[in-house]
Structure formats: structure tokens, C-alpha cells
Image (tube, rainbow over all chains, first blue to last red; front, side, top):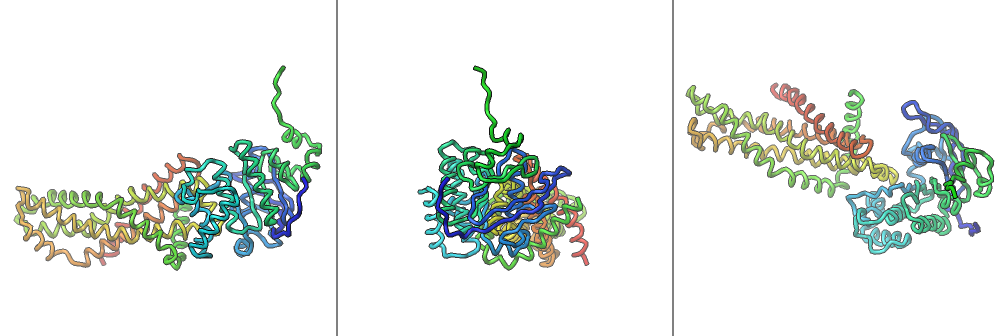
Length: 252
Length: 245
């Protein structure tokens, strides 16, 4: 995919020797990778391979048993790192607060941290919702939105932070192909416009090969391979190939 | 169990540390306060009236038989102000409001809304716990004062119209005024303030630690109510002992 490189404001991220166990079961068995500033880095793998757990570590929602995560060289577990860098996670479900309107959800960060006046917040929220193609939803409740609209509202909420790093958890799950393409284009568009570093966790092969600068395939708690979409496609490993080429076999 | 107690104490400590955020969260405190009052006032009124009535009914005839009719007002007044109003209202609020707090925060935890707050650097203790604990800490003592007044009135009505007693309102309240001191009402209100902190902290803790789906939320609600009531009864004894001195 040929895309012009933006003047980047994204951060780099380094993961070294990350290990995590839950109730004696090791979910992450030593994960190492590095993401470059402004890159779209896709982490793929089958269900239960530890993708979502890894993502929670990357934003600081989980504490690793061993290993470290560095954002521009700063340890993610330090409270000052969270304050220094603007990072956002777009949850699989959107995770909009159901008791607030869509507009209140999108403006929550600015309102709670008292960064702007209410009028300014309303203007920014309107802009960010328009950026993701959502109009006339400002006063709607999240329960009134479709799955795709919820995810776009969640992206708008992430954009309000003016992020340097966005993490997406299964952004196209439960979406029809058209909505999935809209979300994929949204991820590309954001990288082009604001140069944000994006980490996308997904098992959607079309999305991964459509948007990624580089792909990491994770399986059984380990990174099986990392490379450009072309390199990953040609990586001769039975686990990787069985995941990438899984298909139905119908007798004729 | 000890882990739970430790976590509850830690949450309470974090809430105390968050007190300087009160002004910023004032709208949420007001909303919660209104919600508690709105949801409970009628129930408090009915419950308190009949509690006052049943206390008069239980003790009144026995006292009248022993020529102690003039003591009925005092007995009913003291029982309601020092014990029944704070404990019964706390149990009512644990069931009515504590369960709602655990369910709402539990649902937010299960559906990753609490995680979403954390990713936006919004402290769930500031945003969710502080307003609820402050609101209940203001609301429950006020409800108890209201409950005491309605309970006394209920007792007076039963003492007046029950043929086994036939105690006029004037006599009932004169005796109540002689025996019940402002300190007794204040003790009850203080106990209810402590119970409010218990209900708020236990319910918010159960909500925040909810895991699983709807079944997990149901479990949290049950645990919030049961644990609150157990702690209310234990602290009722300890506080009564302390306030006797």
C-alpha cells in the first residue's frame, strides 16, 4: 500500500520480555517487539492467543509479571508516563458510558480534566464526531447507536485526547464488511492526517493486510513472526500459515 | 475475607484522599443525593410510622398495666431515636441504594466502562465512588432525622387510639420530651453517618470488583447488601458501646 508519510507526532513503543500468568496459566510467555512512531502495527492471532491481554498491558490496565514496556523510553507503569503521553484505547465493545449521551461520552476527557469551557467542548465534540462521519448523534444515548456507530463514537472519544498512540481492540469484530471497511479507512485516515502511532489487535485478515505497515502474529502467548504484510504472508511456519490460510472445505 | 476487608479499607482511604475533589464533583453528588432521597422518602415514611406504632403496641400495654403510662412516650422515643431509626433506615438504604450502587458500578466494570475511564486518566474513585459515598453520607442522617420524627408520630397515634393504652398526644410527647435528650437523637444520627460510610464503601467496592457477566453483577449486588447489613449490625454494637461512655 502506497501512502504518503505524515510529519509524525506519534510515539515509539518497545516491549521487552513481557510475561503474564492468570491462576497459574501463562498467557504471555515472553513478548518482544518494537513499534515505530507513526506506524500502523497490527497484532494478529487466533482467539485466546493473548492479544487482548497484551493490549491491556500496553495501555497500563494490567501489570506484567516480568518484562517492560517503554513509551519513547519511559516506563509505562510510571504514573508520570500516563500524564506525559496522550494514549487512547478503542475498546472492542466501544465501552461508551451508557448513562451519558454520545456527546458527553466524547467530551468526557475534556470535561473531567476541565481543559476547555463547555462551549468549546461542544464545538470540539461536534468536530470529532464529524471527523468519523457521525452527525446528529450528539444527544443520542449509546444504546440508540448501531455497533459500527458505537465504534466510530469510541474513535471520536479517543481523538478528543489528541492522541500520540491509539490502540484498537478488535475494531471490526461484529461489523458487516462495509462498516469494517469504514473503520479500516478511519484508521488509515488518522495516521495520514495526524501521524498517530496505531496498534491494532485483530483476527480480521482483511483489515490487517489492508491497513498494516507491519504485522506481528501471536500464537500460544509468543510472537511467531513480525514483518511487512508481504513478509508475514510468505513466512513459512505451520502455525502462521494455518491461521492466515484458514478456509472452508466444501466437497463438490 | 481478610483480602476483602483490606480492599474495602483501602477504597475508603482513597476516597478520603479524594475529598479535595468534592467541589469538582458537586453536580454528581447532588444527582446521587436527589436519587437517594427520591427513591427512599416514601418508603422511609411508611416504615418509620409502623415501627413507631409497633413499639408503642409492644411496650405500651405492659407499661400501662404497671401504672407506667406516662413512660410510654419516653420508651418509644428513646428506642426509635437511639436504635431503631438508624439501624432500620441503614438496612433499608443498603437494600434500596447499596444494591443499586453495586449493580450500576458492577455493570460499568463488566462492560469495560471503568477501564475506559482509566484509559482517559479519570480516576474511578473520583468519578464514581466519591460522589456516591458523599451523597449517602449526607442523605442517610437526614433520612434518619425524618424517620425519628415520623416514628414518634406513629408511636403517639397508636398510643392514643389503642384502647389498651388511651394515652393522649399531649402526655405522650410531654414524657418523650422529659426523657429523650438531644444527645440521644445526635447519637442515632452519628451512627447513621457511620452506617452510610459502610454502605457506600462496601457497595462501591463490590461494584468495582465485579467480574463475569450478568451473573457476576447479581453476585455483587447480593454480596453488597449482605456484607453491608452484617457490618451495620456489628458496628451498631460497637458504636452503641462507645457512645454509652
